[in-house]
Amino acid sequence: MRMLTRRIVLLMSLVLLMDANVVWAPPPDDPATCAISITVNTVMEWAGDFSNISLTAISGQADTPEGSQVQTLYTNCNLEISADTSTTARLSSATDVLTTKYKLSYDGDGVTATGGTGVATWTDYSTFLSTASAVTHKDTDGAVDVTLYVQASNPGGRVADAGAYTATQTLTASWTSD
Amino acid sequence: MQSRSNTIQRIAVVSALIVLSAFSGDAIAGMAVSPLKQWVEVKPGADAYICVTVTNANRGPQTGPCTVYADVVDFTVSAYGQLSFGQEHKHGRSAVPWIALDASEFVIEPGESKELRAKVSAPASADGDYWAAIMFTLGNSRNKKTNVHVVLRTASGVFVRVARRNYIEQASITDVNVSLPRCAKDAASSSVTRDPSDERRATSDGVLRINAQLKNDGLVAMEPNGKAFLYTGKSRRIGYIPLYASRRQILPGHCRWFTGVMPQPLVAGQYSVRVFFESGSKYGRTKTKDLEFSISQELAAQWAQNFTGDDREMLELNPQKIDLTLNPGRFTVTKFLIANKSCGTVSVRCRVKSEQLKEGWTGLDCSEFALAPNTRRNIVCAVRIPADAQPQDYNATIQIEAERSGLTEQAVNNVVVLEIPVKISVIKHIGGLSSESG
Image 1 (cartoon, helix red, strand yellow):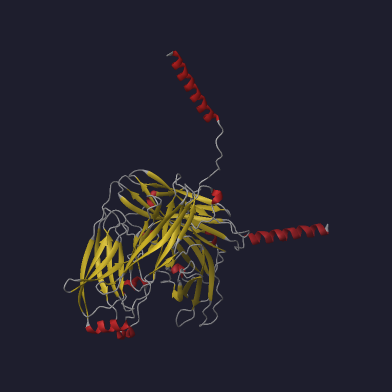
Image 2: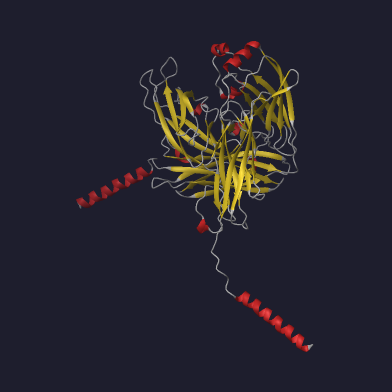
């Protein structure tokens, strides 16, 4: 009986020693892995030189000077652009106003490249982009050039007062439908 | 002594030129805003915090510092889905008084980002959804005096839910009308109104339009699905027309116009149309409204004569297949584009089918929606591979079932089912990562 007990104790010691060897053994080779996760949020960036639009002087009743400005818009989502339709967007001096019209274009059509259809015809400041212009994002094309055009002319049937005329146009980019 | 004086003069001139060029305004600066909208949930009487990141991306040596102005402003959404910003659009569910920004004006150097924090404090009496926008204005263009100076802004929407309970969506159909196609002589005698706000009421281009306005009478935003069934005078259903809206989300108290377009001609006779709106959530109820109209012999003949058929492919998908190579634990998103090429509205249902992918591995940002004629929509598919996923190839398909508007009793198949095969190769080691389209 004592012999049997000794054998059991010996066997248990061996098992423990084997386990200890397993515990103390160096870990097996395992290549280092690192799972990287990243979520890309919707991003919209206005970028450009922000040189504003200067128009040549009006020196005749029929003169209609035009100017334009290009802004690059970086985006990874659909968005829409609206404009200010208040009198702030109309060229005015201290005493008079000019007929002020705008157009907008994109270098992409929203199908083959990021962009949209824009506003192709000269539109009075009071209705310009009153319905926002949709910019559709196309995968892997994260930039679109937005061109804003301005046209000034004398009010119908007369010549505007002499002087300097200024206007401020505000373009607002915002989220689109869900 | 003379040469020393000349040297000083030259240095002064060069210094002046450098200073002038620095302020000449030719420097490039950018203002990247992310995200463009976000939801935040806050308990009544409690605070929550949101962040918007503004970055001045470094695009080379010309990039200069960027001044940014941030304001919290009200906005409203018109019945046609147009956003309007500003104090004049203040409303009863404005979150403007609740949102405090930690900065209202700051300068970002090239390559720098600023995480703008906003504290949202909901009053104890608040209940349901409230909204406002953080308007970021690029400051560089503010100081110039030319003929037309352009101010650039980006709006980031903030939607606040003050959840006191489970909300039941409540809505009512406030208006339904039918726009019939015009005869050629009508079209020639009057110019078409192109004011976009009247677009849904316009009667042109030889199609039938069903317009329905839905009002959100509840306390939380809703995203309903709309459709219309056409019946003959004998109450026999003969047509199906999905309804779309330019902005599907309807905020509490707001109305939205939905429009359905059907190019297929109807014969002369009496018809009725039943408009349905189903709630986007499980707590909503279906709303219906009926309307009757008639088609004259002359109009039916003209319509049938002008109808050129709609045999084009209903949908166009891009890409045709999706291949992803990911490692365990990876989360990524991939997009696919669905374009409606038909002349009528189309309802679309998307789902991911797979016996190999386990639940929760994939998710679509929108599974049910309607597309207007010749419009398209990006669908985002999120893929999350669990850390304990077995390395192997997993195959799935994105099934897209679409039904276009049209007469249902003719021998014309208005339903198509398309599939985009998806192959996700899960590999264990980054070293083996070969390519990924996500």
